[in-house]
Image (cartoon, rainbow over all chains, first blue to last red; front, side, top):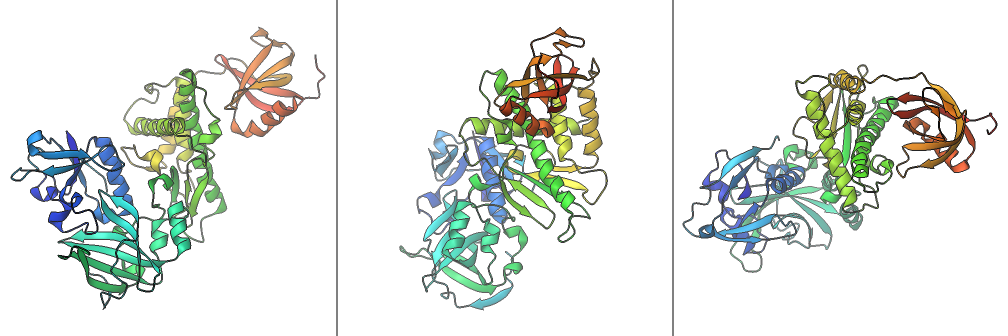
Length: 108
Length: 395
């Protein structure tokens, strides 16, 4: 079970596009740009989103969604200093947002 | 995306904005970084918005001192970005192995033209470790620059310190009961001031300078949890005397006293108090305390302290020979008289005391002079109401 920041409720496919697909994070590692960030716990996701909201409020999504990433959905790897942050490289043809539902709406 | 209010200039005017030093990274995207302009001077580059393949940044020229202050937590991001000259840079992707982006548009702007919803709030620091632990902001018709009174400013500082002290006492009690050696309650309440701000007066307190990872985090975490629990109970539709889970009556009273200390006074120019900081991260409800919260918290305090004083105040002299590390009680020995009303002969009395007696107690404990204590018995505890040097001779 993992958590991801999303703009829409209910979640849409557009909430599950990588930086590469969005044409963003242009200075970042090209491999990492192709992954999707997810978090292992709701608490860590909430804390990270608040961090972003405080520093870059217009970049912060409004909701946190929960879903499952199964073995057939792609590769998952812990990344960065936050032990609850994972990168998900989704396999082709996977409907990435299929199992995800919004579980928290942050009040800002 | 919003249209920048400024003049479009040559997109190469300030260089390529290649990151020279990354300051804040989120999910591997560089959201705040330092770049170097064509003259070799520093530029602070901060992500504002992103949409439709365009990454929009605010670019502000800075110097080494600003950068050092920013990284050391002495300057917040908003203040560092507010410079007399600023630019908005829109970056888009380009097919190049060396520089996979280019500046599509560069605008010369005034800082104040940037929509506030895109900027970090004043006071937000680069690194979360420098974010205030606890903030109190006064809101009301009497709280404007040039008008906020010294009394209201003192109120803000006292509210923060008193509120934290009450929460720390309970949190440290829990540690004592678990057999852990607690630290001085003041460590968790008399915190360093990080900044204060005049418009809508605000005071922000940071963590102790010599933060001990582990125990200190646990105490502050417990204080935040208690604050959340207390506010939830205050705002729930429950009986004034409803118990607070996990707390004794005495602790519940302390909790509501701590919250009461944070509420605005019933009269005057301060109408609401907003609390913030990492201590409030777990708060599910509103962070704004209103005048309604003051009588509500007062009722909860009274309900929790409904056990009456058993005996009237008494006077006893002695020597303050013991105190705990937290210094919220002292032990009086060499008593005169040795017989305490309602108790009989005792060799020592352990007195708790309020903060206003701290200096006198510290002096008595350090000097070992005989002191006269006026105290009262509440249930099975003794509480000092006053303490003075004694004229009475030793027994």
